Length: 350
Image (cartoon, rainbow, N blue to C red; front, side, top):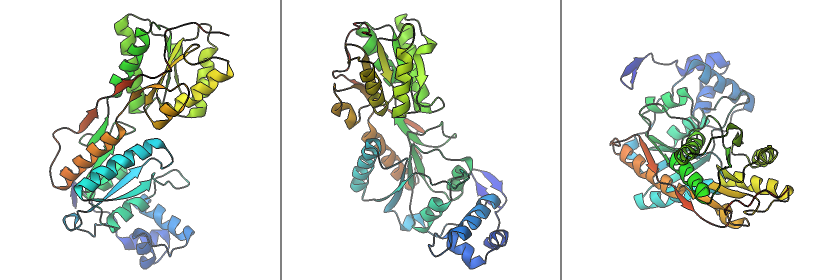
């Protein structure tokens, strides 16, 4: 029996069982488990599927206490200024702590859509002492794998509400939604639309909840048709803005739940001959470099991405030392950064 999280579970299958299931030799199965490259792609696929199907648990080959200088950072992607801010925060904090960081872009998935085991196995093979996950969506089996191997980890801005006991760091998204909406209300807007991210993501639902709370506090009627979702996609945000403009009574201002989506909103407004902020006031969220580059510069809600990443690294170091944080959820404050994209309502010129 293997004990994990206070409960006993049956030990998993041996490597010999996995090899038999995949129709390969034990040495070949071992190569796949250890991340060796000298295995044919089709053979690797069969072994990987057998590992997942049978629930094989690779036993750790390292003593974290002997290799305290290495941590992993798994980011959603490497092609965005968001990731750059997170990397900057982790790198600076890791340097101060005397740690090395290995960066992986995303959780690779098989053709069937299931997460591959490769990054987990490589984590063990290189002797990392802990992991930071940024915008990652882990499966129940991956959470169990990390717990079974006693690998400390911290979630940075988790996509979904993590299981009880999982340590995470994020921004005060509800507060940000309130700040964005209160700013527009103070300018005199009452017809305020929202272009949100994913309906099921924590940050998106919290920002929309903050928007609704601010409207309610101001005694302004909430209009369901003013709330649209664009999945944090720039092109889809453009289409959603056009849908808002086509309403019988379109909004005079819009709260866009990411700076990247605001680029699509600007594009839609330009297509309709509307200027910012005279034809439409726009507030974004994130305060990425893009917010300063576009014209007019974007009023936005700043979430402290680098600080979030650094805080997560500090928490991970404590966990690697055997400590347990007092709270599993840490939220850093957001704030309004006022630029040139908002003004009082002046009506929509068609």
